[in-house]
Length: 421
Ligand code: LLP
Image (tube, rainbow, N blue to C red; front, top):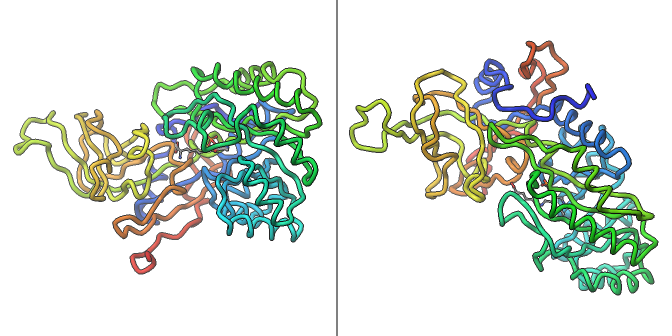
């Protein structure tokens, strides 16, 4: 529907003038998050999965305004740590799922304190041992068991979770563990997650995971929900096509089959990836050879963001679109590099783009998911600032995501060197 907005927002759709004004006002590197786009993405998900329980995997972006926006759209929260549980509850979520992966004792203590204080919590345990630790702490609330579905998918092997022993209990052991857990807990569901960044090509893996979960649900019976995880991918390359969510939803329902339990999903990236850009300023430009007189020789453009600001390219070789907001110039191969003393501190290698000059402002696209969240203070670099905007709240040019400046507010302050410990 109209409220759901277009299926993809490309970096080219952002207003260069607005982003430039924001960089001038707040400095760089700067994350810009458009809450309106978060809302559109949430609406599209709810449209495609009207009969499912949809939670937001908050690990993708835990900024307070984003959490509140997704909550207002009607989603629950899926959390991976005590910190995420606390942030989600503080942001107003009433239904919170804690997916405990090898949980530290302190995390369990903090989360169960919140439960004792009345939080409506579901704990997802991925090991028999975790179930025992919950029992030892007197937990007798809502429990789901995470299963290793034996099938995985994702944009990179480092984010493919299904099939890895680290996550979940072996599929064949799940019925026995579930039956035993019913004695002490309110056993409400089963859970599995294939991985992150699932594309149309991974639909078979997704179908297989869902079918296995459906079979397990029918075998054990008496469940409130079957959670088949998150992982819906978004287009990162300019020519990547968006997932057909309706097709994914149909495939999911069909694979799940006839179960007397609600379907649950928990996407993260899908809600926030294209709602965010990272702005960074060019500081140093040098040709890769000594002379550089040839106008087409590759150059290295040093920028003020690095792998400490946006880790994805260094960690997963992830592709992010990069746009020069300052000028249109003849293209040449450009390596965009950060200031960190690591060879992998690159945003792209010899990618054709307008020849950068010192002072140019670059925008890096799809930075809304796993961007700020994975920022670090390595090399004693302060973490960047973030502003949130609600473009719809201001008049905009047709076809442009304008209105960013008028509605911008500082969501996360830029760290200072003195603040880095
Ligand atoms: N549920 C569980 C249990 C998960 O482990 C994850 C992601 C999600 C849901 C959400 O997945 P999504 O819908 O966002 O794909 N830092 C990596 C992604 C790591 C995802 C880890 N788990 C990246 O930047 O690509």
